[in-house]
Image (cartoon, rainbow, N blue to C red):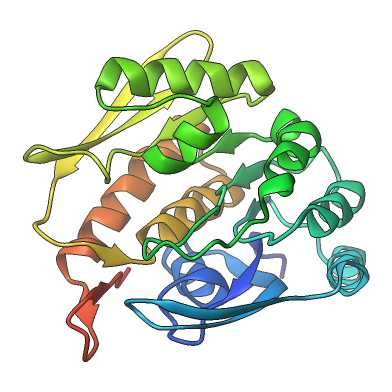
Length: 255
């Protein structure tokens, strides 16, 4: 029996709250078979990252090519890619006809750098032009668009600048904003769609990873882009509302 499948290319989070681990949990909730290519090992928990060790690019490429020999995912997401060499390995191995969801993981919420500075330009040149959708939060959109963002109009302008890089669609996430509602903006060349939920009064580890994984899973299962984003927003909003927490008190997404 064939079953819809999705692939995550990302780093490992031993706390289970982000990265490959939360991606696979999220894929289960979107009713697709989850696969994973690991790009980095990390030492982290819900509140901080204390170390990161990228996998050799040829090992990443071998993982990816071997998986693709046997199964063709309905969609692929990238999360933490760590450096330019890994980005190039993924770019030359991943077929361009598979919908690609890019979560441009650059730094952790605690400020730990997860993507080398020179790798951002390589991502813009090699992956973003072939993406189906890219899902930056506000700090990531500021880096990619080379501008500061404090208003919704600036979120829209940043999204358009990222589209000019080559992205088909951008969803600029509003979780780092303010106000009683968290509004994400799904931006294309022709329209802007607002996805709104109640803002919870706390930060949540792994919500960005889980959101992009949910979009990927729903696309892999046959939903169109708008429906996938709407369903992912609902799933993540529920996951934030029932988040768990560790000894530090910081919450972890619970999709």
